[in-house]
Length: 143
Image 1 (cartoon, rainbow, N blue to C red):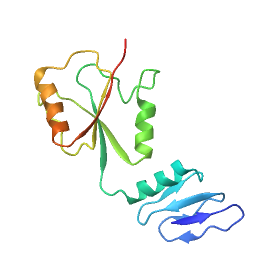
Image 2 (image 1 turned 30 degrees about the vertical axis):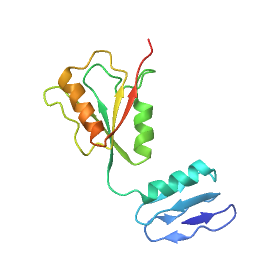
Image 3 (image 1 turned 180 degrees about the vertical axis):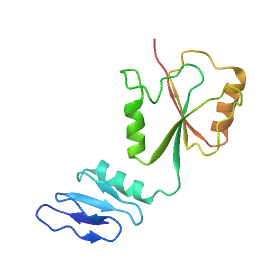
């Protein structure tokens, strides 16, 4: 971890080159993660991102008319997708139709405001995923 203040010359890393001038913290070994400011949130986030290994996958259910990750409109989730990708998540949509299963490589399953009811096999697949230790985020539209 390296702290670089204003007016200081940033060290050169063989992996990442020279740090940008200004107050920031650089954390990581093989991965480069920078805190853009010295707030607790930014510093902690950079450390956590640098220490996390392996792929982190955010799987969005796209079975029953959920909000879409590629939709740039007001009701779309493209901004959430970009935020997750900046935090080293791989983001993809998954369908539970046909083969109702949430794969084990999903770090988190996100169900974003479905407009239709899920069929029993789809509910069972989500339930099994959560009961087996998977994480899920359910975003429901109150209307």
